[in-house]
Length: 179
Image (cartoon, rainbow, N blue to C red):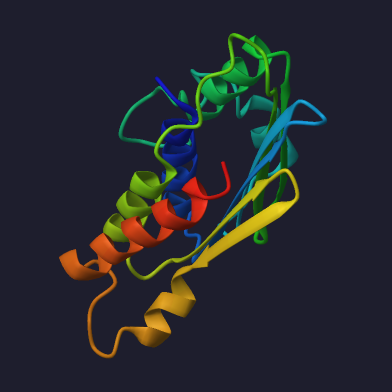
């Protein structure tokens, strides 16, 4: 994967596949501390400790459609390449939290990528899921929530072209001003 937004897309799609109705994505850039932190939390079915222990094994998957699951393994490898780490916390019936930490200045850290496009793809593909995206940059914070957009739609669908275009512009406008 070329950038971190694609890793985020993959992990969140796993969350939705696991039955999540609420997903929170937090991207925190702290340049004074030289850290980039990505946290993805969901209220999906969760995993037991044995599944968590194998979650980064690319040949361990609970899916029946294919026998390889690379999402968490690739995110963990990307974090390690950038002098970072990844942790998974999960409780069956409650949900899962994935935290990946990267050394911000590390030459091997992948760029964050187009988070606006990632959020748009997630909303388009799962319009009934409540997504929260919070971007923190050196003490400043921007938060996007689909529930706020949904309250303003007045009959438009979350995945209508007009709504998706607005979401992309809104996120881009508010996050570019932070970086």
